[in-house]
Amino acid sequence: NSGTTMTIAYYLYSTRTGLSPLEADQWKGFLGFYAGFWVFNNFLRPLRIAGAVALTPRMEALTIRVQSRFQLSRTKAIALTGVATYLAALSYTTICMALASTLSGVPILAK
Image 1 (tube, one colour):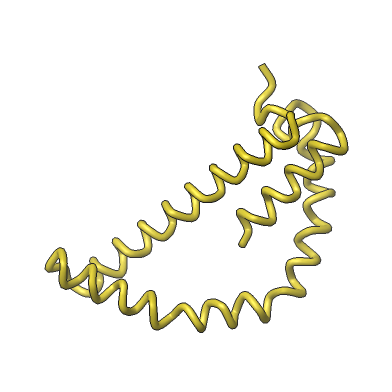
Image 2 (tube, one colour):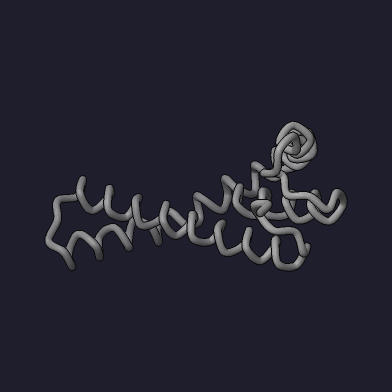
């Protein structure tokens, strides 16, 4: 969710200013811009919590499969599932940011 919000904010900021938020002296302006998205995102919190609750049985099943497949203790299976989930979210955000950069025509980092 935060990856999607960050990507949308990056895209809109870049198309409006023609600059990447990571360029010199742009971070402060981008943070103000992103704060508006953060406030809006708080209104979606009940939906995010409901989504997390709905996904809990699937994550439990995944953890059990990882535990069985790799013959790990429950603690290690939870840790491995957590790391894999984190890496998936990081990959998603990276791909979305690259797409936003391409669509806005503004490179992520200035050359």
